[in-house]
Image 1 (tube, rainbow, N blue to C red):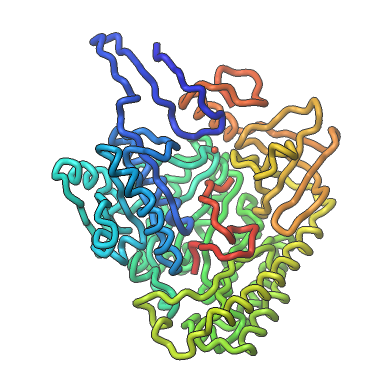
Image 2 (image 1 turned 180 degrees about the vertical axis):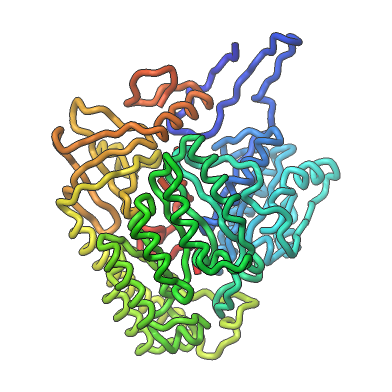
Length: 536
C-alpha cells in the first residue's frame, strides 16, 4: 500500500508527493524525487486553457506540481496585450535569477503571447531563462526542457503556425467540476489596437464533433459546467463554411445529459446574430450571461479602431438579448484613451455605458503595442488625461454595478460552489460560488445545515449586495443544498491527491474544483479595474 505523509491543505488541487513500493519487483519508486513544476499564468482565459495543457504535458512527462516558490521548473505563460505585461514578466524573471543561481538544476521557461512577440529578446534581457516557446508549439515544452538540460544551453523554438490544436494535448484542469473548451484559435479581425492576430494567427476552427466529444469527456469525468473559448466565438464555422455553426453548437450542448451550465467568451458585436440570441434563450443549460466587448462608445473611435459596428448596433444587440433573456447579466471590455479620443468621444462612451447597464466591465487604459497600427497614430493621449478619464469611467461603472446588484436583493439564485473563497471568508464564515448569470455570491450555511462541497449547488436568497458581489445569509428554511456529480468528482480528486479530509464533508470513502480559477487580476469580472479578457 502507498504510504502517504502529506499534511496538506485541504483545498490544494495538486497531488502530494507519495512513496510507493511495487510488489511485483520490490523496487521503491519515490515520487518525491521527481522534478517539481509551477505554471504561472498571465492574461486571458485562452492562456488559462493553454496553461492547463502545459500542466498536463509536464505531468505526463513525470513532473509533479507544487506551490513551493522554489519549484524545479517554473513556466511563465505570458500575455502581450498591455505594456505592463512586459514589465510584470521581466520583474518576475529578475526575482528568480538569484534563486536559480543557488538552486542547481532549476529551469525557467517562458511561453505564450509575449514569448511569441519578443522571441530571442527574452534571452537577451534574461539570459538565465532556459526555454522560450510560442503560442503555436506548447506541446514541445517537455522536450525543450529536457533538451536544454541535456545541452546545458537555452532552447528557443517559435513556430509561425499552429503545430497541434491545444485541446488535443493532455490537460490538468484547475477545477474538476468545470472546464474550458476551445472551439477556435486565432483571429481574422484587424483591430488597430490589438496584437493578438499576429501572435495567435488566423482563425482556425475545430470540427463540431471534436468539440462535443471533448465536452462529453469532461461531463463523464464529473464536470457540470463548460465555457466555450475563442478570440471571436460567434465567427465559429467560417473556416468550414457554416455561418450558423455557433448557434448550432450551443443547441447541441443542450443535448448533453449532465451538462448543467454552458458559457462562452468572447463574441464580436459585428458578427453577433439573432440566431445566437435565440439559441441562448431556447437552450436551458446556456446561462443568462453575455460578455460583449464595447471598446468605445464613440463611432469615430470605433472607426479608428477598425471595429466594424457602431454604438447604435451595439445597443440594439443588448436590447434584443434582454428582450429574450430578461435577467441576462451583460459584461464588457472598454478602452480609455485611444489615440485621437476627444472629450466628446469619451462622453459618448460614458453615455453608452449608462445606457447599457453592464453588470461589470473590464476597463483598460490604452497601451501602445509596437507592431499595431494604433501605435503609429497621431493624437496619442497624455497619461494624465487617460488616467482622469479612466477614473471617471470606473466610478460610473462601479455605481451601475452596485445599482444592478442591489436589484438582485430578494431574488433566489442557484449557486455553483467553487473552491476559491473570498478574502474575508475566515471572518465571515461564508463560502463562495457563481450564480447562473456569473455573479459572484458569498453565502453562509445555516447552523446545523449540511455544508456543500466545491461542485455542489445551493439555492439561496440574495440578502445584501456590494458592487462586485452578492451576499446571502439564509435561514434554515431558505437554504437548499443539491449534491452533484461534480461534488463527487471533487471528493475523488481530493482522495486521489492526498487523502486529507475536507472540513464539512460527510460519508463515503473519499474526501470532499464554476469557472476555472484565474490568477488574481485587477479588473476580472466583478471588478472594473484594468484586466484582460480573451475577447474581441
